Amino acid sequence: MNTLFDKIWDKHVVQKIDDGPTQLYIDRLYCHEVTSPQAFEGLRQRGIRCFRPQQIVCMPDHNTPTHDQDKPIEDPVSKKQVDTLAKNAEEFGLTHYGMFSRDNGIIHVVGPEKGLSLPGMTIVCGDSHTSTHGAMGAVAFGIGTSEVEMVMASQCILQQKPKSMRISINGTLQKGVTAKDVALYLMAQLTTSGATGYFVEYSGDVVRNLSMEGRLTLCNLSIEMGARGGFIAPDEVTFDYIKGREYAPKGEAWDKAVAYWKTLKSGPDAVFDKELTFDAKDIEPRITYGTNPGMGIGITEAIPEPESRALSYMGFKPGEKLLGKKIDYVFLGACTNGRIEDFRAFASIVKGRQKAADVVAWLVPGSWAVDRQIREEGLDKVLEAAGFEIRQPGCSACLAMNDDKVPAGKYCLSTSNRNFEGRQGPGARTILCSPLVAAAAAVTGVITDPRELL
Image 1 (cartoon, rainbow, N blue to C red):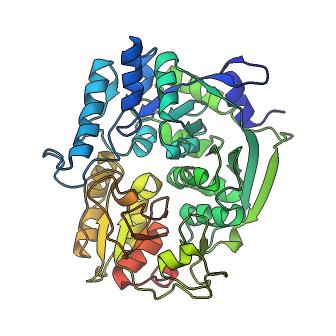
Image 2 (cartoon, rainbow, N blue to C red):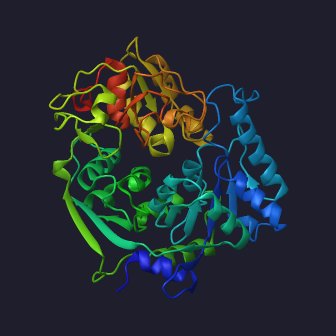
Image 3 (cartoon, one colour):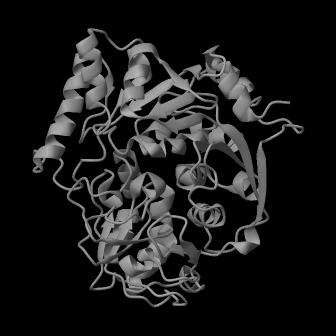
């Protein structure tokens, strides 16, 4: 019996080259402003148009400022990239959700919330965190700019088929443990290269019980284990999330789609190239201590030996515990944790408390739709009463491509996906965590176990 990955992959094969790549049909291409300009230029030079423009969606997110979005962008490089995407989308007749439009946000947040990402699809974008869309039961992966051009021109891509891995997490998560903690735990167990060459299917009790938003967080971080992508078989949680969304099938088409989506699962006798099983009871709220997402510990644990370049960059020592460590910045957002559930979690901790006076907090919704939900649910009032301000949507401090940069030497507790040297600004020190851990630090000013505040 084929795995779910085989089922989706095989259905999209146009032709296979012996001892070579597979020509794979792509259902959805997402384009942002950073990795698309050269692809559009390539089409122009060859005098060709996009083959299936209706299957391409463009959106600026990396360079968008998270304040004063109604004014011209001050940074000339960011402005040029955002303006160029708008011009290219118009010239090539593509759907474009421009900055400050009600549909804008981070492309990996907007795609699922608009029903553009659906079960059984193949989805690509010139961005490594495209794996996020795998939570919908899709085969989704990041590609390079030359491949973006290939998909624009032909709606196909040449790919070697990855191997398959199933990761099962069984049992029940403890109080205060989130999908982000599960992902950080898996990265520490597998290392950042442990899933290289594989496409990961997540399964088990924990995964089945995750909300759609938790699943999006888990799949988002697949790439940080070296995987080509990660995904989850669609089920009632998926269908409930999709139903009624703008681009979701309607009426009779919905019933037909759900009937097909229900077939999208690995059979009981499916054979994977690798299988791993973990127990939920071993996972506590987690933080990173180094300069890759796999260098992580449980929040009550000590930093392991030996001394390393990463530790000297971070200003930490082997054997040290990070509980009580003073922090300077908190960032809630990114395509990892910028959804409504993440804001609910953050608000649940800060409600009735006050932001620590010397902490700078950037709370950035992943889309304008998330921003509207925050206000409809009154979370904005809770956050403002605690001394927090909600910024405008964008990738923000996930990466230093916009104004939200962490200064050199400062510690930032971040709900984003990467803690590489300089990722959040030259010399910035990033500690990855969940929204609950970020909130606990935001009100105490130090790294705090969120279970003490829940």
